[in-house]
Length: 110
Length: 113
Image (cartoon, rainbow over all chains, first blue to last red):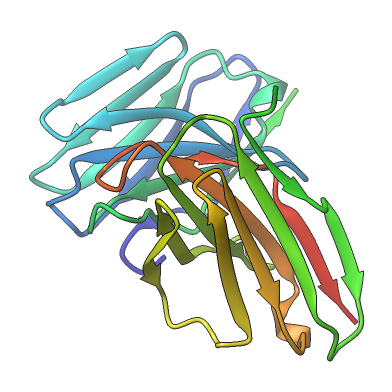
């Protein structure tokens, strides 16, 4: 996790937008990923972005990539209670494996 | 029609025992992985196999031995279990080996007493 850094916790009110930030180190990663892990469950691929893109939108999810600063963010619009989970940012530096951040625990309050 | 499946889902065992975790994928992928998630939720790659051949071995103790009988299966055998082996072990697969999306299994929660 030392190559990918994320803040550990985020609390957001239901209906508001959530923004989860991530910084990574390897500029050779062709793809950058966001995975979601609900309590007691496995990892679910949420979305990914190709490194030559600045932004990708997928329904309530918006991914922004600043390649110069090696900064990735995930915005969840209209956050719902079902969005409470741990969100992992991941890069693929060598191409064979994923390097994950420590995960951001998102808590949605009513 | 689960894509990546693991058995067992939970495993509780005594220190010193030997245990195996199995993984199967029905996605037709060539590459499979084992990751370990510790109590702080930190995820780290352990092994990767491509078409039954080991391609990643990330300084994991040799008590851990992966085995891939075919490209749809990757099992993990652990000898002489230690308390520190308690974790969640995730299997994953991807189509090839380069910069491709990996799909994860539900995890095996191992508790060593």
